[in-house]
Amino acid sequence: MAAENGRTASRDGRLAAPVRGLMDQWHDGARPIAFLRMLKSSAHGALRAKNACSTAGGWAKTMLFKARVSMSELGSLSTLLPVDAVLLRQEAPDWRAAVRLAGRALTTSGATDATYADEMIATVEALGPYIVIAPGVALAHARPSPAVRRTGLSWVGLATPVPFGHPQNDPVRLVVGLAARNDEDHIAALATLAELLADEARRAELERAPTPAALHALIVAYEQIQVVPETA
Image 1: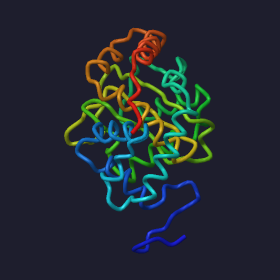
Image 2: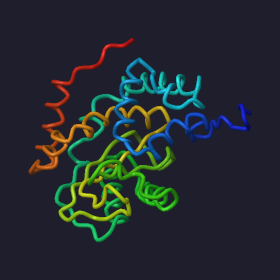
Image 3: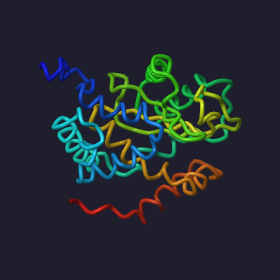
Image 4: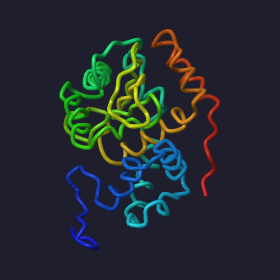
């Protein structure tokens, strides 16, 4: 379906071009964590992301409304990130190996098949190290694809930090893997993860967890005290 200025609204599993512009705010922005927090607030009802990307317009509102519905369907963060998707004190010789560990954890938890790791690596090779979203933290992901069985997350703590090639945020000590069934789940999962990663003290506490079970218990405790913002 043709759109203004020759943009195309795709229905083949990719983000429509105006909504891709919205996600580019994260890919290209200097403060991606802040953008993820804005996405969380927007998906809860305020839909302020419309103002963050003037080209998104009604498509952004539609996508974020669907993401809000998707958030309620996805379940809790502790469900998206089960114990068997957590790997701690792992060694990786380079960023590709680190991303493969995140892919392996997603596959172990049943979220993806083994080919998804290759798709995440290809994304970085094509677009660069924008996935390093904060000092020491990478959010490995790829577009929704047949390799994704269900939306899920993985958590890989690295024993030795690894450079990804990011000019400010290298080296990486934590790789979070994200797999999403569709565009709405992709945004919803990002929003669900945003506050957890945005709080540096909380993230540091998670990184100190001695076992996958202990890390998972901290996430459950976080969920129990989390206050959902009021809708507009």
